[in-house]
Length: 69
View (tube, helix red, strand yellow):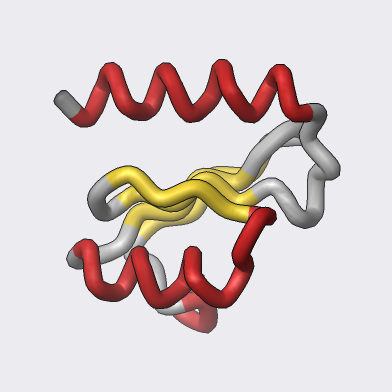
């Protein structure tokens, strides 16, 4: 995870969840991935390795948004 610049990394078959020290670092990482990532605060969901279907992405992003509030 240190080579990605994140503080924590969790990977499943469907998504990788990366936690960054601040929003700027998270945004920089997500920006490099474009459509393959979704940022919410200091958390980035990374889909590129998993090829996550769009309907699952929406569920992950809604769950993350609900936890971030």
